Length: 175
Image (cartoon, rainbow, N blue to C red; front, top):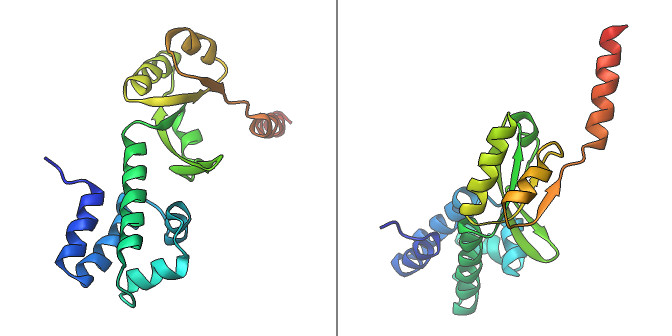
């Protein structure tokens, strides 16, 4: 049985200030893949307080520790089911720089599903829904089919700028 990220922080807090400091820093950067500023925003903790905790210049009070653990559990929960699936070819997915994004005051996890054929995209959509996706984003060529087979909302990628750039690039090649 694996220990949750939030429980790692709790255990470290009981172990020592140094263990808490080290674990909190590791959890934010590696496990949650957030910057300290992003985490402080999600946790509603001033960035200066978080930096003092991570540098060992301050011990956490109970209110702050509870807020840190609550935020980690919320983010952990979003990884287990509350996410938006994006189905696209790998080069498109490589342009997505965020794995979490605050939308309308809610932290959303973005999970990538690589697909290079319509069949792979349909399979990825079914898999994403089974894994707990709350919504899905995909290409217009496959979205009508996906909307017929899954029960979650589907949004279609409309890459206006990239289509124009591609037309310009290919026009230069035929001159």
